Length: 245
Ligand code: SF4
Ligand code: SF4
Image (cartoon, rainbow, N blue to C red; front, side, top):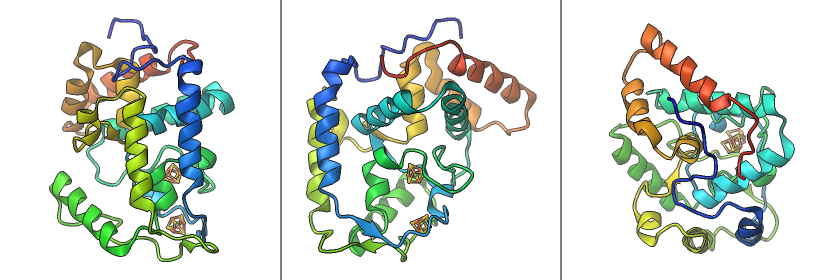
């Protein structure tokens, strides 16, 4: 990989200057604030050890901005490294890179929609999602067949409006410049953090997605995979760079 990283390039050609992102990120926080408060999570970490829930690009940028403002370089590098391992792994269960060694979410304040509603999605809707995920992955079972039953809505809140809020999230995604077709397409701009990260930094320069897809099917202890992984990680972690702009 010979080209310098250009972090201003991004998959959707969106203006990433702070002044351009300020309003959409503010509106995203407003949307999150409409979600009901939950109670009951014991922070056992079980759910976060087997999944990296999908997010929209606006949510990804929100998380990157938070990381830029709050994490030092070794912490960011650790998250990137785990994310890269997830990106090249064929394993179905992947631990979220934001789960720390005390089973705490490192980005709790800015966690994305899916993490906020896990446990309170109406049962039928959750089962539909499970069905779709199985179809997409071509598997018969997934780890989170059922939602955690320890989590419930706190106080007077309700889960009736969750779909509406999700729709508003899609609209916000379109408003930052992601094309409607892309947002509405399954797998369009709704990806895991690790896939977003690769696309954000490399913009598919040098056919990186194809490289990663090829790496995925090679055994983890294959010397070529180890060598390429090392080179790629060096590139990903190199230099002083800001994450957003
Ligand atoms: S939501 Fe449930 S499974 Fe996930 S960390 Fe909380 S208690 Fe554990
Ligand atoms: S972002 Fe936080 S809450 Fe969501 S899966 Fe990762 S560690 Fe868990």
